[in-house]
Length: 482
Image 1 (cartoon, one colour):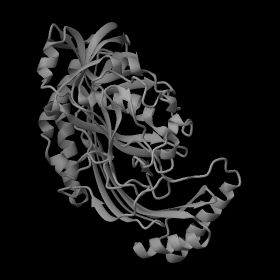
Image 2 (cartoon, helix red, strand yellow):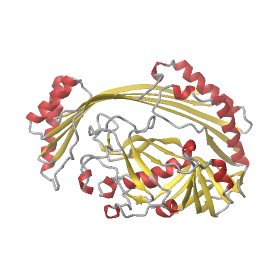
Image 3 (cartoon, one colour):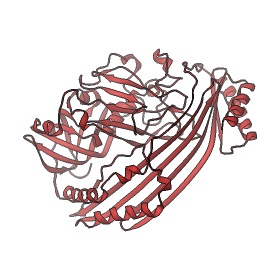
Image 4 (cartoon, helix red, strand yellow):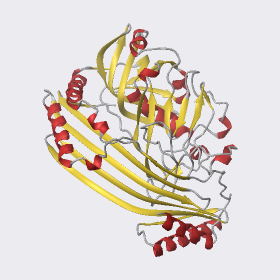
């Protein structure tokens, strides 16, 4: 790999590049989908290739290929330089990369069991047993399940002297029960987050017990009453708050959106550069960390796709917006001297974009249990798991539903309600945060397929929190489905 990388870099420099890098990647994906008592899809795919970036006259060029041969490496390196030369003719502002040391390193996900070495028959049997357990519950008409395993091996090298090898492994289980009756249908999913782990994640869960409980809650959700509209306190579980953080903070604090570079895919952001260091994003309890170091989280790595060493940083501190997500190219636009390490490409054939790291909410400093939080809530709703959502093109006005919602009355969890969502503005919502449970209740969840870019790319990132309470948030009721 190093020989091929050096050939690419030497060719790019010879052709006139002031900077060049190469990513040689191999991606393997295994997907098994079952519906009811049958397996409908099994897929085990693998692809490999390389992508080369080059800067010439202050402009980027990029080219890629799946043919890992010396002659092809030289051809693609020369092509990347030619693309950069063509791009430089229309250049308005030259590319400037903030400094980063060179690294020679190897990093890998700390897995215990490689899921690709587990027999397919064992995975199929698990899916069928879990689906079968859910179908035993009266009222469940459909049970769906999938197991998704993804392995990424990448080798990065640059003309600045970096040679970095990384091996990443991801495991994503998903099981859903569908209850049908009385002209309605409702779903409930087993709440197990995807993680950067091996098959040990699958083996750590009592799936049969969870399957039965999940199916029973789906039926309960079908039979329960409609929620009512009005102002209520919210207690949001980590399995739910992950998506609200992702959409209203994660995407809103991407610097390329703030600069207007990213607009076609889901818009820009209200968090413009003039607000850096001054915007009151939420209450003083709101402390949001950007993090590529968090063990097991989906965006964790040793290095980003600019060759920047993984790091941790504040995005919001004591309620104030203090830092964007950046890359080596973007950092200078907010007068920072180093990158936050947020460059990522989803394939060897994709150009690296600024992508979210793991973004998480710090737990409360004082001891606070979930039971104590509930007992201190007079009139509220508890949201578990994610549901439908909508957010505007500036990441400011939104509404979020949940996978399951329960009433809280006079400090006790009551009956389940359905077809409710909360609606707010980003700063109003986070400003209403008045309590976060302590560290022992903190859980890491995440998003497995976040889209961005043109052409579109998909990425993964973790979003952890402890249960948190938000005061007097507007609740809407669908009178049907939300």
